[in-house]
Image: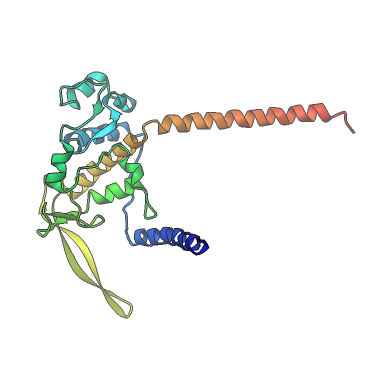
Length: 251
């Protein structure tokens, strides 16, 4: 029994090290996330509804929560609710999960908290999403015709390919001090409707919105926390002053 316990303990120590090693080789680009940029959040919400919400759901997010980023109920109803539902409805998708699994091999995951769940040693969840959405490339060996640099053999097709264009993965030789290494790089084979810079900005807005959606009350929570700390410091100062006043005549 003791031997079994030691074995389990050893495995628990090894697993985090293995997970860390698996993440360290992945380079993630820094996502320009700014929760104070309402214009960016609104553009990101529009992109999310038009391109992501067709297959993915956001079952823990309501449309009317977008009032937090400066949209009115009328703007939400006219520009973001395409299902005939109400502004107070959850962001659900009409696609059946069983049919989606048959089409794609796996059901598209809910994206409400994806920006938090994708955090790793290699970077934050928004960094992962920002890199992921910009590193799709053509791969005719895959059922969808697409693959991804940081998510090899991904089942998801490139939903934004008409905007970005078609990238291909090429191997190049990079000389070093006393060695030559093979490096895989992406290159744009067929331009899309957007320039590379404009596409990066669109993805940045989308990721900014998804980061907000993962924790829409974050800004409010942080503000309350700052006020709570301020009150605590005031109480500490008052308590210290009271203590000095109480003990000043005690020798």
